[in-house]
Image (cartoon, rainbow, N blue to C red; front, side, top):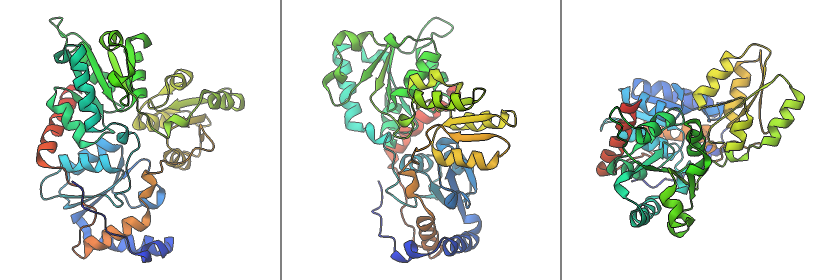
Length: 370
């Protein structure tokens, strides 16, 4: 459940950057140890400057879980705040500065669609031999679905381990499943499957808008990896031609991309990995190296500022930031902090008890695997 968002007073939008910065600092100081501000790597600097911790979505939720702070302000998007609410204690309140900060990828798979897909699969295959795996970039309701049906959550860092858990035989030669329904990002599923040695022919794209995902019955039965037709709107923008253009300018340069990018792009790049992988890849590069990065531009700009001894640029020179992530700005952060200072909690994210219980099962399975 989400509380209805009250309208942010115009005074916050009209305030200067300097005034907002001063007021955020004052509110943060006043709230003291009661407050924890979490900043996802894709956030703008005007927000990230006040974050107590930076990280990816699940890493930040684990930080919230270990915190004693009463107020957890998650500067990210909706599904991230849901995960933090699932993991934190009952007395902790998770706040999303702007409820409009969603995730287009997460919105590409909803519970009704997944339940329909599951029912249709049960008509043509042994559903007991199918495991649902959901990417962290999904709603709490989908994480709960996965928990109820024996599956697990995965991140871009551990997707290989989770798919191996689902499909590889154990010491007795027994596998948990014959196939996986992987949602909502087709590209992470495809890239991870190829890394594990599966051929593209072992995979089929499931289109939730069509009966049986748009597949013939033989395709649905034969595929090991059923990949949901979803994607990240930012990572979808990167193209192989951009890598070729970069290599013309920097023949010795390196290209690193996120596995939410297309398979063709991942193959053309020098390396692919999670946000944390990309950060470490840049840090490990020799000073003077030119590096093109295929991920969200706010992170790329921050890495360029922090590693000026390297030439770092976004693979797409015209790439836009994650639009929904950018809804979290200094004005909204200032508003929710000052309201909290006055005892008014705005934009609290709460997940109902049953959904949270089953979603936590799926998350705990993931943690047991890795």
